[in-house]
Amino acid sequence: MRRQGIDWIDNQQRVQDIHIDALSRVCTQICADFHFQLAQVVFTILSDEELWMMNVKHLNHDTLTDVITFPYIQGSFIRGEIFISADRAADNAVRNNTTQHDELVRYAIHGVLHLNGLNDSTPEEKETIHRFEDQYLNLYHLFHVKQ
Image (cartoon, rainbow, N blue to C red; front, side, top):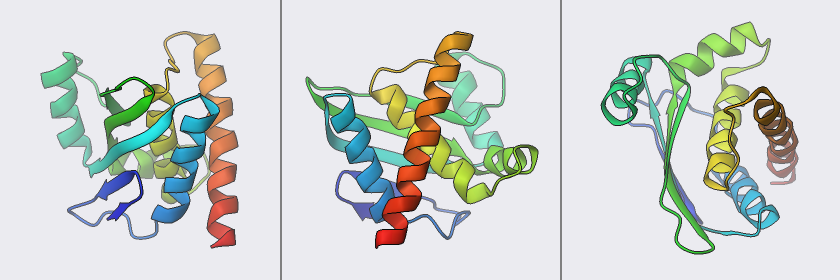
C-alpha cells in the first residue's frame, strides 16, 4: 500500500490491520518534530528468517532482530527503507502483553526515529527512544480514531 510519504509492503499479507493513513501522519509528525521532511519511507514486512539473512548479509550480525533500518537522507529530506519481522512482533507482543499490531507499529516508529538520528546503542539511548516510541504510538492511535 502506498500513502503520502510511505509504502507498506507485506507480500505474504502477514498484517491485516495497519492503518496506513494514521502511520503516514505519525511519520510526517516525527520528521517535523526532528526538523526534517518526510520524503519516502518504505516499510517491508518479513519473516524472522528473511530478516536474519539480511542482518547477516548487510550488517554482519548473526542474530535475530525486529527492525533493520537503511537511511538515505538527502539534506533535510528523510528517505529510507525499514524492514520489520512479523515473527518478532508476534513473539514480543506476548512477552510485552500487547498486540502484534502495536508491536509492528512500534517497530515502524522505531525505524523512523532511527532515520531521524536517534540511536539505541546505550541504556540511556534505549530509554530515550522507547519514550518516543510510546509517544508516537499513542499519536498513531489518536490519528486512527480521528479517521
